[in-house]
Image (cartoon, rainbow, N blue to C red; front, side, top):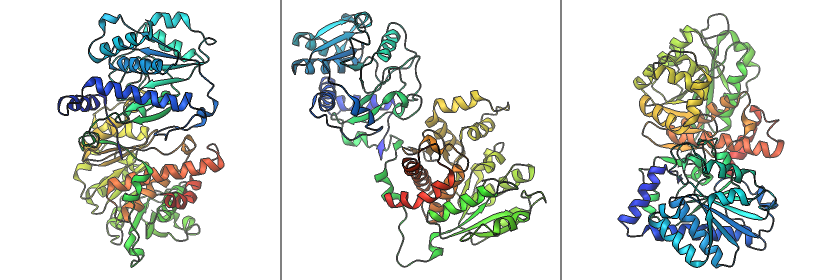
Length: 542
């Protein structure tokens, strides 16, 4: 897995490299600039242009690039601007027409940025005040220019102000490709939030490690194609366990997927008891169960209100059905707890899809959290049932995996923060402003494994590990896809994966199945049952 850093973590790596390993900041800046220049030459000045492997994004936009006549380098006052001066100097020395624009008086430059400013001047690079960029270039004059955005780096912590906000606005209006150095100017590298305004880049080249803001929205929409470059940071620093956030890649899954043994039987791969469904919502239970079997669980039993058994029985094939006491209206009663806890065949308990919510179900789910001795995954109405009792999670006897979407997450957080007001868009927005920290904090406080669904889905463990999912598409924003995910995670738990690995596997393959369907049918027509059909292909693909 690729580690994903915060601005502070990257600064510490940079500082340790300089102080402990003796590689100067000037050398690191030179290598950063060289790596961007190499990439620019491959992409924009080679004939034909080559396309380096992508870390994020697609190559569709590369087919429309036009020949370039000039490179405009916008340089800020910090190290990001220093990288820009290295880029301008090297491109100029290679015979390219280059103009650099500086956002502050030259005398305010310090350290390595000042060294590279002076070097660029000595090499003959034309350097102008930043206001000249605003007045000199129009959409017509910049059409065949490449803009290198080296204004603001990963340390941005407050909203962009004039004159840089005017510069960013100008860049976004020009009909010219933009390459951002490290991260588009105006994006928080930790949260992905737009700090007032931000550059819309076609390409971003970052150094050492990707940053959280490269993957979190809305910032991720500004990144374009993302590339990562090695500029000489020690490998042990880039792979340190102290870096707790990871980007999940397809190659990681081969090590996580439980192996199928030749000498085995259906019991080897676990028995999932899926407690789900209510009147009008039996489809949720069925989809979760079928996804569970397709993902490799040996046995699945659907625990459903007894008054709905006949309606479900005619639709199941490989799945088994366990009638559970209900209230006579198609919803479970509290008395179902005894039957569930006494179902000794089960090795995993999944609860929530289509369950409905009332006082008895709230009591039922709460009791199961504290009494169940087998791993448990809670989704949908199961989450709503415990939204005012999340303190019970610390008393669970076995690992618990929660899979909320932002609305459900807001309800869970309302209880933790003792905020009793109605769930509002503001609360949801607060979650979206930093999905990673929200998930990490909740998992640590409750000792539960958290799958915070959304864009991107974040998996957080009680031990402090966090994973960013890299699959999925907007077509999956449709009814039932969450039920499918519940079944997939439950299946990996049943096959022996630990809760963290089961969550990572389920989320990644769920998104991969969605991507495979979208490629064939398009995003608009994707429905949840399509995902179940695509699970075999997704599993085979890894």
